[in-house]
Image 1 (cartoon, helix red, strand yellow):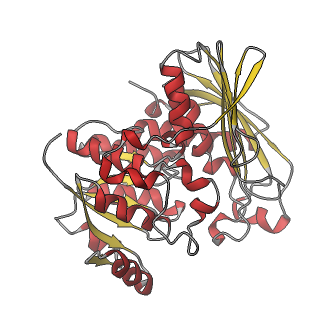
Image 2 (cartoon, one colour):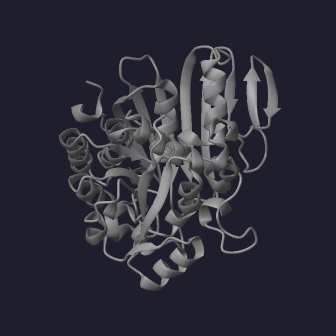
Length: 371
């Protein structure tokens, strides 16, 4: 690895503040600047973490020639426009999920990456969670045998979240369940078919025109005999928060716990065994290993929802930072890169389209598939 530090700017300081100290401690990153429209919050966060360079205007930030990369953590409707602007301004991009809200926006980001030669990474947490890393290790060591079927779900009650979430089509925010099934198989989605079920409150439907309480999608993998099923809910469905990922193999099967904080289960034939998932901090530079088990906020107050629900995204935050920074320093593609991120994101977008059309089979666009 080259002896170079990447100047990073974080845009959006709600969830985004979680990443400030990780970049500050990463041996190859410099936490250079932060950006937030709310001046009060901008300075509160800047003062708390000692970040001197502060912007309340995103376009002004992009004009700063010292910034190598931006990490975007803004509302999902802003992702595509802000990512494209950053790439056109000569900045590498990491962006929280989803990549975009339309297929055309995903295409524009992929094209911008090709045209500029810059790097884009969608910061999908589940594919760097300790649970996923545990299953990946079992599979790559041959313990799972042949993959036979994959299933994932993300069920969450979004009442009380910011208004732009209200009535959002469930599959428009499906990367947490789509990402792991594609990542483990190292495959692209070829086509999808999705059904909607149930109905959300009438006052929630009008914003996006989506009536469904739950959407459940089947994914056919390209050049593979594998398929997967993913399920997503956001409103009016009684369920404890759950991001789950089940893997059915010929030798072993992994099933995610039904209740948060209880053990998951591995089946070997007829014999089930409860398992405790180990942490994977040892895969990281020692300077950021501590961030797999704690957030940046005080343990008893001011916790971000990602640490209240979902156990801090499975310790994924430092792994995401390390993957992005390492890719830039070593001049390699991160995972997921722009094309892979588009394939993951377009599965959800097209799944909702399929659900609105009675389960119609829809092919993923060519720009999301490997050349």
